[in-house]
Length: 184
Image (cartoon, rainbow, N blue to C red):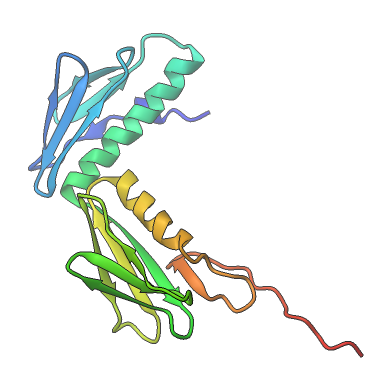
């Protein structure tokens, strides 16, 4: 059974954490500011250079919220100091990606171009110089937003199993299938 909720969260240099009276935790750092409304049953306390998350009872609900909020707060501190990044790879003949004025334009084999406007707090850039494929880089301080934007871009043309064409995560493995063979 996981006991991740008991681990203290180290507050890095340059990060300030403010715990409001209504359990609103605000984290400020060099890259920005994030807020999280913590469940009233879960207690967040400041220690000496760290943050502690505590639960009132051993109920299943409290145990699950304990680990959840500890992970969310740790992600917030990482986000405002280092930020998060997801990289996608566009593979296919004629498939391309361009960023103009903050809008991602994708040509993914459809009869039209797809225009994707990222939400506030998420930056998208394109790297074409890394070989024959195009790479889309999604950056931001909110881990959930970065992951959601990357998943949305991937869903526009997921990788297919025969030729491997489509948009995939850089570290993703696509299982390939054999094509048809001639009847003999």
